[in-house]
Image (cartoon, rainbow, N blue to C red; front, side, top):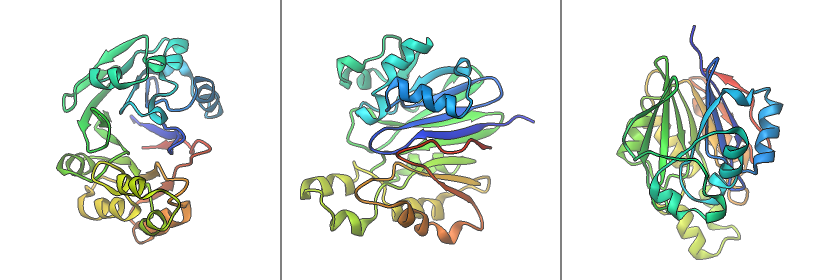
Length: 254
């Protein structure tokens, strides 16, 4: 039986990288840690780098693309991104082997079908991804200011989702960030709160959805306990796991 394995190699404002693989091939979404650190985490999970076919980049912020150039060069991997994202990246991290995609246009990478879709975030051409194989769909949906109709539609198709649960509203508003930064995080171009992520699950989950990995938790404006507690009422129906800023998650079979 065909299967997909997923894990978050890193998830948070200090670095993001998400792994989606099958028996023979795999993709990375984002490479926001150093290439060395990402290679160590692949080794920890006993993931053979030769399975990797490409790195997909969601947007130009450094916690999503910091290691893409070096990792792509070391492993001989193409890096897929939009031209606008490439031009917005710091030149030092622009990949040597860029391949272009456009938002809302599906493309094939080996055995995987990749659908990048536009989202609301304060980047020039930010995209999330739905990655499909053998009739199963995995969403990577972080760095989203609000769950627009496109996000809702793609979420409803997924069997598993890396879902942003970035901040607790009380912690953000009463926390150390300056006012302008609080406004940015909570804006429609910022991030999803725990409650917003939970509402997306409540209102738009498809019948096939069974696994949610709460992702991109803020280190200053959230805690794993608060994020997990927000979703407690849904644990009877879904497998709900936390990702970490400091370590990889277990490999989960879809």
